Length: 188
Image (spheres, helix red, strand yellow):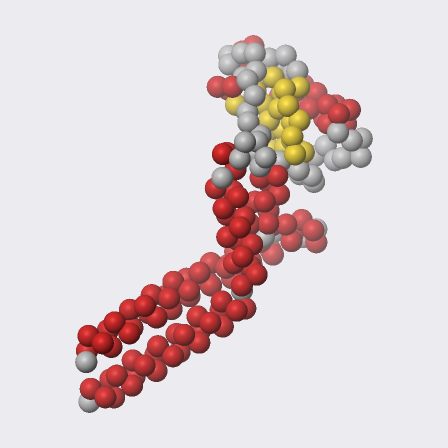
């Protein structure tokens, strides 16, 4: 009876080892990209401005003193065209209002350029390449949807689903590969 139980446990260990190895081999490159980009995203605020620029200080933190958002958007698009390139899209992805800094950040949909404007004067505080946004698109797979021009991010959803299930499989099989032999030794 004990021999059969041990054989059954060994069979399950072999199955888990095969699943663990096959999943790891099939998704190695994706795990590599996720781990490297995850590290970079974790360090973005501590990169000395290489990955994410610092937030510059505007004139006033009182919103009553600020220009209207539509005026700030027109100014941001003008600065983008004048200082970076006339060929870039001015379609806004995000407008981040940093009240405590007296500043507004504009990020764009079709490229990684961003601008920081003084909320009160509309003066350009900083022009940046937002590498953190590019790294994030690689990390979550949305770069594939952007590259192929798909809407509603179906590739991102597929990618994150596959990688989430793979991580779950790795966790379960990895735990069993660690715990299974201990259990077999204890039962002897």
